Image (cartoon, rainbow, N blue to C red; front, side, top):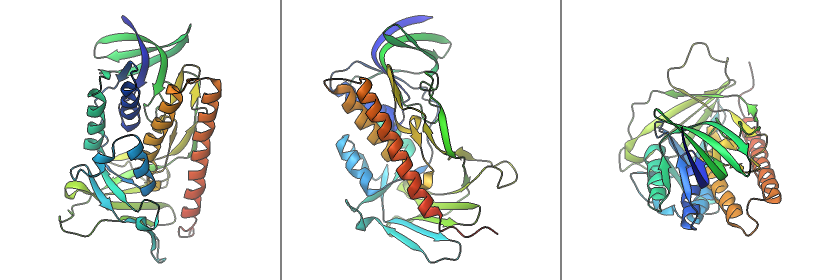
Amino acid sequence: MQHRAADILVAGGGPAGATIARLLALRGRQVVLVDPGTRRTERLEIIAPAACRVAEAVGIAHLLYDASLSWPCSGIRRRWGTAEIELDDFLRRPGGKGYVIDRAPFDDALRAMAMDVAVERIAGRVVAARREGGAVVVGVQSGAQRISIAAALVIDATGRPSAVARRMGARRLPSERLVAERQPVDVLRAPDRETPWLDVDGAHNAWSYQVSGPNGRCEAWTVYRPGDRPGRPQSCADASSSLLSRAAGDGWIAIGDAAASFDPVTSQGLVNALSTALVAAGAILSSDGLDDNARGIYADAVAATFHHAEAGRARVYAGLAPPR
């Protein structure tokens, strides 16, 4: 067992973890990023116009203009069964621009930016966490080695598992359990085609979406409730919307999917990752730091954002074809 200490430990190297690690390191904080580096998010994801302003605020807007990572998106076209198509044109929203992001290389770019500002990375995964004295002690499995790191503050950016927060007593509260199943698509977008749309179609027990993005990549997913379809899907992901019972506690804070996760059709994933990273970094760097008041305000804001998004999702899905 190797023992060491850190000022701030960030668990998880996805968009939320890499972003907050970089923001804190740029302000002179000693940051250790624990990331297994074995899982890549191999999918396309939408950034709506509101998220573009967040990308600018965290200093990554230039990635949106890199054609190998990102492609402009016109908006969302929804069709529920035989109903007319509803257009959510991004040009009509503040900012007027949306993008389709190829998550794997995009996430790689965010991690590289964190490493460029002296963030220390440990290849490993969190296997334990407890409060001990004035620190949170995190157990990290790094290959065959076990490392114990005592940190003044631990940031949980481990995604849906919430590997730190749940060990500190928080619970995941599902709003609706959903499965997203990847569908085979063999159509590539020609380079000179019009700016793509996210196409969403619904039926009484499932809804699907399809989009094309950088490098001619095109993919489609079907989202449904577990048990609504027989058999075991070949390629699927957890698409449940869920909220952490509390997003911050004594010596720790959760960001991104670790704090709240969303149905992928809502296009909330990346904006939630970036915005919670930005807000949490601001609280940590403030004169009072992450005190009881700041933790309460942050947790309330995460919960309010989640419930607002769920209310919007319910309004959209109310247009689904009626049950048989």
